[in-house]
Length: 160
Picture (cartoon, rainbow, N blue to C red):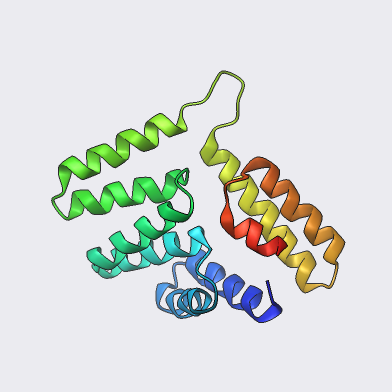
């Protein structure tokens, strides 16, 4: 990932975390103009669109996140909420049940949602290393993230 893309992605995430959705939307949309492989960006935009009352746009964003990462529990639950808000109760129940089924783990195994959160933290650390010019350290963090979540396409994109 180039430095500019990494910078606008970090700005978008930062504004999103502070619930500054208008600013976050601007940066996150710019990310998708350059690279459509970030499931978490689609999920964040879906949350923003839902907050704005743009349910159809939110639905498309959550569906895009799940197309990139079918195991993305947070996006699945967000999609279920949108379906419910749109009166699509059967679809909401189906998505919710699928998310619950996917989220079940064997005893002693880490929950997939938790794995995803930790993988994203490793990726964030990798981004910091990358922006500091510490490429070997960045690659190490991205690989740690991929070890937890090998299906995360955005992590593979970061490794080129």
